[in-house]
Length: 465
Image (cartoon, rainbow, N blue to C red; front, side, top):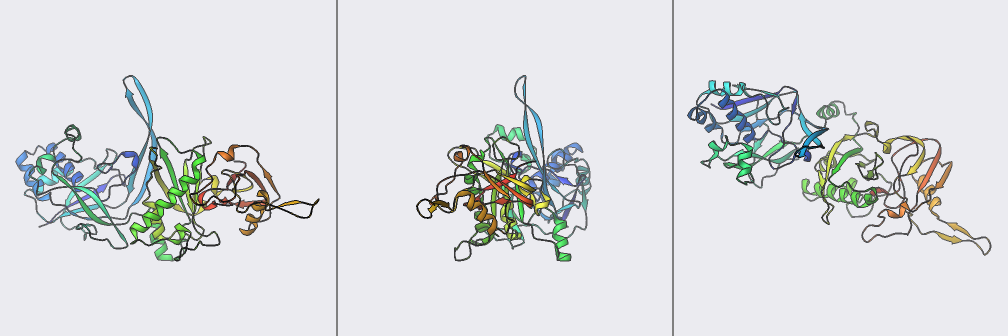
């Protein structure tokens, strides 16, 4: 007879940091790892007064990795400052990212073998107060008729279906004679031995349904067909050394490269024209319907704190999947990694950001880079500049179908020259300019114009809050 355990999260949230990750990576563990579940049962057995032999009779048949029935779940996180006593008598505040999975339905773990004492297992499960981090309150119980599993271990090299992804979680190694005793070691014991992972464990790969940010939205689209494809993804940027806004071009280029790489890995080496801006033959797309990668400083410290991907043509499920898998960027040259926390997918109106504001006056946030070289035309004595920077701004607005501006005023100063304005092998005309654009009526953002506008150059934000 199989053994099945129902796990119901009291607050409808599962908080857990996967083994080998830091909490601020905002990594998600789904399904709950078999090792975590066995450790919780072992703790419950000790609280129930079971001796080692009785505990072995319960835990022994559960050392094999279980199958799971996973409900629909959505990903989320909170951010808060926590006190940290770095040195004796000196307390600092550190920013903590508490990632979690939200679900209103229980998880079922199903083992093929039967335990020696189901009553003892039931008492041990009732003694478990949480699973994962301590705020992840849970109620566990034995059930006789679990639903059909939808998440099973897969062999090395096996591929998941398009609707699934393969994840790695920590599990007991039933072939290791130390596996049972290792369940009773503390984390400090493992660290003291200098081990990468607890003794008696192994990594097991599971195929699971891909995590979505809002399962209700997926059901609505399937049932009504009227749900619009999201156009926008927004990331929170976190790093030990936040990148300066002057490196916006390098940062957005890195984000694009990472998104395209994730897409290729997830889809057999294929490419997304939305993410790359190129068709199947490698020709650049026209019409500015593909993804804009934008970097913003929204708190005025001249450091990038948000990354935005905006694609007027829409971000399909495959693009969302690729973007959701980008969790960190490596700027190289010994600089610290940049951690990305996806805030969600949606329409522009779903996000409170100046990028998506509606305004009459817009001011350069990153420099406008001319597309063409300015020229001097006309006969002697009647020379005039053609394709000057302000004229190119007006031309860009006209080509985007925006109303003609009331005025385009240059913002003087050397700060625009502090920005990186060149991509490798694509220098373009010289010069970097700042402008303030005024329209007769409010227009909607994003507003990005000029060369490398799809990499965040020529980004304008409202001139007034």
